[in-house]
Amino acid sequence: MDTKMNFWVYILKCADDSYYTGHTDNLEQRIAQHQQRYFPGCYTATRLPVALVYSQPFPTRLEALSAEQQIKGWSRKKKEAMMRGDWQEVSRLAKSKNTNAASPDPVEGQLLTTSTNAVRPELVEGHSFTNSPSTSSGRTINTTTVQNKENQT
Image 1 (spheres, rainbow, N blue to C red):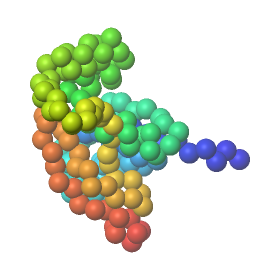
Image 2: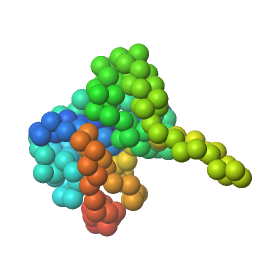
Image 3: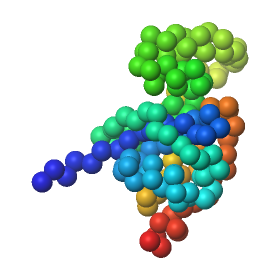
């Protein structure tokens, strides 16, 4: 018996042409939940229908969540390059963002830190996250905790 569980990062294209990025441990079920407005407060609930345009498996929930958060920080162009498999363009867009970013001058005695974007968010069965999903337009949406609804089923 194979007990290995896969986790997925996925991107949905919404009816308004925006993208929604999430992660799950059951891709087919999660897509159906989006289509059926199972989570009424979810970004996609008012932007139906949605279509799956990208998915990638990960061996652990943490890796899927990290990838989701990273992708949510990307521009629409960068997401679309990744979906096309154009890794050269993804790299170019990453470099152009880094060279355009303003960085403050270091202050004496202050430690220099680098921030790294992780990836993903979406509510996963039995878990609630405080991260709000972002859209390709840069808007951030408030979400409601779904844990209670999941416990009722």
